[in-house]
Length: 343
Image (cartoon, rainbow, N blue to C red; front, top):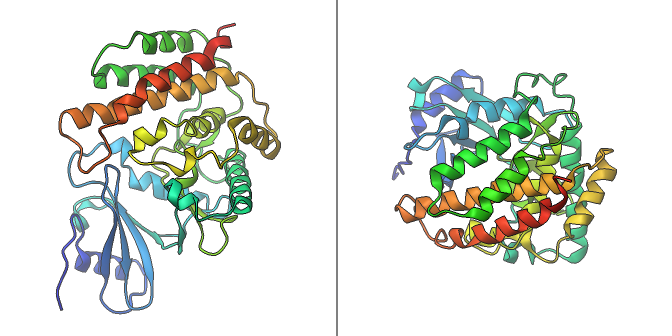
């Protein structure tokens, strides 16, 4: 039998760890790479009868706060009975001696991920409507989880969250900018002068849109699991909602490097999404112009960061060369959004 070696994965060591953790293994473990991009390495792990998903940080260029798989595991463990669909958690290993880095193992979800417009076009209009309703219901349910009751009271520092976000993304811009952009500086100044009082804090996902969920294999109106929790924290729920809406901007296609499902005109407009959220969550949507401006600011800086890494040759693969072109459009949209923020 040919043994396939995978970067950052020691299958015999993993098999010993899982067996010692009480996980029944039927035969020898095998693996397949699911994702090896700029985030965590993700593998499908399977034996003769079962399949799991393993996540671990990249083998190089570690940024602990962005690749904290243990944090992700604790969040999804806490959400198991919350009404927010997540994969069942199986095992957490924080002993780097086992496989060179911390890693997590969760149940494999047999579903489908809608990433591109081509993926979305496999759904009917009725399926898209019902799927969008469910996506909004779930983010509203997440924001209404009693984070203290589920053991996530120490997940973050919600006080001053929005102020820190404005400062964080401004400092990130200074680190990655490839040229001066006065309009972005103007957007930052407007946001810094218009920070509103936040509503009651909640768990925020930090990167919520359709492609960070797994839909039921046979029913697109059901979300089998929300994934990619590595940016989750305690903060202002309206920042989560606004970023979900800003991801609808066509410039996301350039940021991601392909025609994204979430930018499709077949999906509801932002005003519709916000109204559905207000009904589902029972929350008042105040200072919306500020939150949209902040979300555009954040996505513009993310796009410039991708552009910066592409220019210095630090990206692997195709689709990164257009990210810089998205920045002016996102900044312009942000400035348009915050026209009333300081009033």
